Image (cartoon, rainbow, N blue to C red; front, top):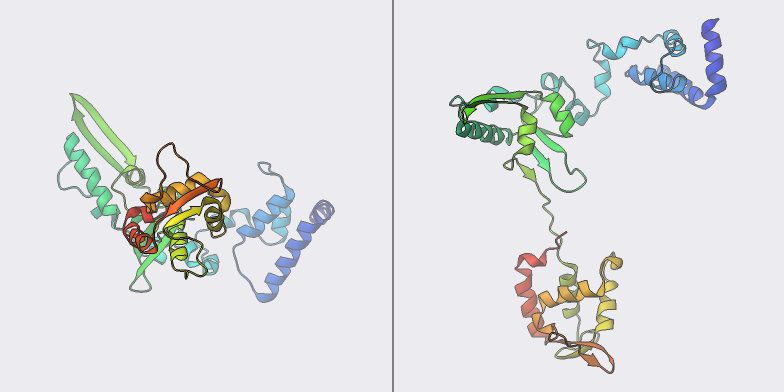
Length: 317
C-alpha cells in the first residue's frame, strides 16, 4: 500500500516528469536495454526530493523498480560502459586498464641526480615538464581553450588515442605528486605538489596554438579592388579619391562593420600604403569633402606584395 500511495503522490505532483520516466523505462524493457541504472536513480531523486534533501519516497519507488542505491558504486558491473563513446571511455578512472596503455610515470618522475640543491631541483622540474610534453598539451585558443590534450597509446590499434580533459579531471586521473627536499640559505625547504600543477605552471609546457592564420581584411579588400578592371574600378589611380566611397565599400565587404570605425580602417590602409597618409595636421579635401591620394596600380601591387610577406598581413586580436 505504501508503494502504491507513493506512486499516486508522484503522479499528482510531477505527472509530466513521472509519465516521461515510465515511458522511457517501458521502451527500454521492450528493446532489452541494460544501460546504467544510475540515470534512473538520479531522475527519480530529482523528481521526488529537492537537492540536498533525503527521504524514503524515492528509495521506496526505486526498490519497486528493482534498483538499489548502491548500484552506482558497484565496480564489478561494467555492462554500462558498452554504451559510452570513445572519448568518455578514455576519461574513466580505469581507462588505462581497458582502452589505452598507461603512462610511464616512473620514467617521467625519474631523476638522474637527487634534487637536494636549488639548481638540481630546477633541473629536475624542467626534466619532468619535458617528459610530460610527450603526452600532454594545452589548447591556447579556440572552443577548447584551457583544455588539456592527453595522448596515449591505444590497446586496440597501433595508434595514438587522444582525449581532451579539463585540468581538474587530469588532476583526478593523474594524482601523482612530486616531493623534493633541499637546503637553501641554511633553511630546509620542501616541495610537495601535484605533477599536473607543476606542468601547468611551467613556461616550457607544450601549447597548441591556432594553425589557421586570418589575413588582414583591409589587405584583402585592397587586393580585390586592384584586381578589378579600370572600367568598374572604384579607385582612381594616381589621383585624389573621396574617402567616403572607399570607406563604405570596405564596410560592405566585412562581416562585422560595426567593429571598424573610420580611424581604424584608415590607419590599417596607411600601413599597407604609407604614401597615402596625409601630412601631419593637414586634411586634404576635394570639392569640400575629405579626400586621399591613391598611387598608381603598379605601385599599389608592389606595396601589397611587400605587405603580404610581413607579419602585419595577419589579423591580430
